[in-house]
Image 1 (cartoon, rainbow, N blue to C red):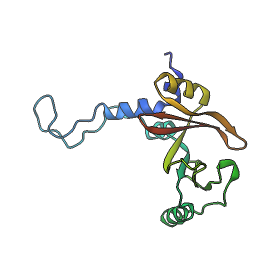
Image 2: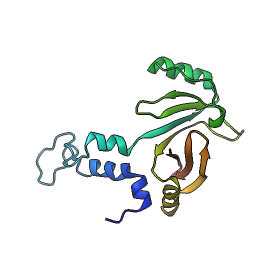
Image 3: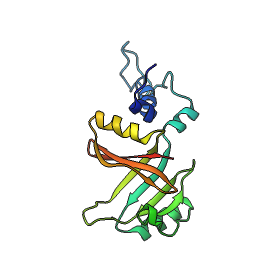
Amino acid sequence: MNRSPFRSSFPWIVSLSAVLAPVTFEGATPQGRPAPAIAQAEEAPAAEEREAAARVQYLEIVTPDVDATCANLGALHGVEFSDPVPMLGGARTARLEGGGRIGVRGPLRPDESPVVRPYLLVDDVAAAVKAAEEAGAAIAHPPFELEGHGTFAIFIQGGIEHGLWQL
């Protein structure tokens, strides 16, 4: 099967559609029988496949209130945030389950709005960016290597910022 770079870089989209397609909502069976509130997906991917397909490598939170956000998240989740990491825009970071990191930083420019931006792990960030652009996304930040951290890129689709991360 010939797969596009977008599909191989975003297998979670295929997995999500496979999970949602067979879902039946209450009262919606074609045979007129009552349906359960939500029917089980007939061929949902295995848990291991879903986890690997939608791994968040870096979860970035941009906020004008870094210290309070870190204190709140630290207390809620029992984690400690690092000192600011210059290579990550001064983000204070903590580990995510599964090997990624969460970073909380202040705006880097006066017009940067608060945002929560997940960076999904991809095998080939350049191919994923190309595929996103071909699918109509605007590239907000082309692939850029952060020494010791990997390569990231950002695209905007439907008004939502999406991050990509390659180790």
